[in-house]
Amino acid sequence: MYERHTLARSLHDLGMGAWFGGSLMGAVGLNGAAREWDDEKTGNRIASIGWAKWTPANGVAIAAHLVGAVSLLASDFYRVEHQRGVGAMSVAKTAITAAALGATAYSRVLGKKIEKASSPESGTPGGTEEHHRTVEDTERQLRWAQWSIPVLTGALTVISALAGEQQRPSQQKMGMLGRAAARLDLD
Image 1 (cartoon, rainbow, N blue to C red):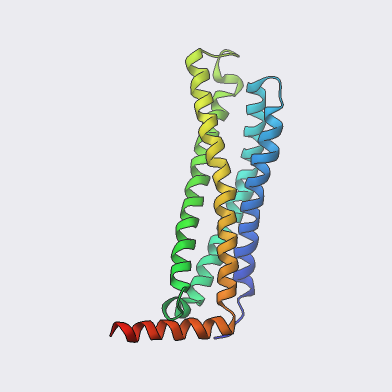
Image 2: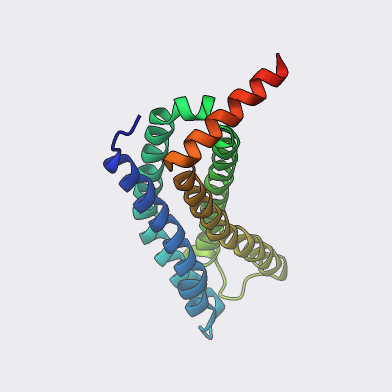
């Protein structure tokens, strides 16, 4: 019952930390710097290049987090079944992870649209009014999507702290007794 899972915890925590930190730095630092540019198209292009360079590292971070999370879930499956609160925490963590993955993928799709619109091959420097509105709408959606990633991965960090607290021997004992008592009440 008291096994060590150092590699799984390390992959889980380092992956989540890089996913959270990279998305926060990109939303604040990279996008903030790009908005300082006098020429919006050039600023968008610079931000796009930065996000494109981050994408492979972010993919590795997300993969590490997921491998660690699945490994920890598998090793704690007994607790998920028998300790009150652990199952609900696991469901919440899985749902938030799925939302963060969706937000990350959606951000990349929107980012690629802006990258294409701001590339030198995209046509006239100013573009049409309709093109400009489309880019503005995409940028607005992208800001919301990009800010949702640090919010969601921050929430995962908080839930992971709760999971760590649930692993304390006193919490395990109380949770398992509470689950057993609940089962007796249902019978």
